[in-house]
Length: 119
Image 1 (tube, one colour):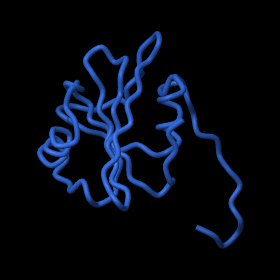
Image 2 (cartoon, rainbow, N blue to C red; image 1 turned 180 degrees about the vertical axis):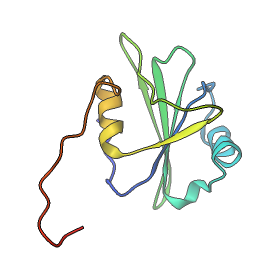
Image 3 (cartoon, rainbow, N blue to C red; image 1 turned 90 degrees about the horizontal axis):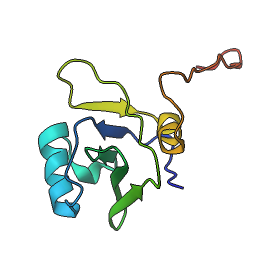
């Protein structure tokens, strides 16, 4: 199971990618599509055309890491994008739901208790 700290921004590329790309190819895609530097520590997600595979590129101190997930059956449900958007930002909870196969459009966040005076 892929786990990452909750404070890490997660960017999902909404267009299909040739997942034969490795470190250099994905780094180039991050710079051209997201306009971001890979070394900032963000997590970048890419999916193939059939939506049965996903790659994650992440910089950790010491080097780049690639995670690769191939589903045995079924497909990934992608986050919704609007218009000509090529990417969307998701949080760690949405990433966990995406990897677990939870339909993102049916999932709802419930109101949570907050301590008075806290933000």
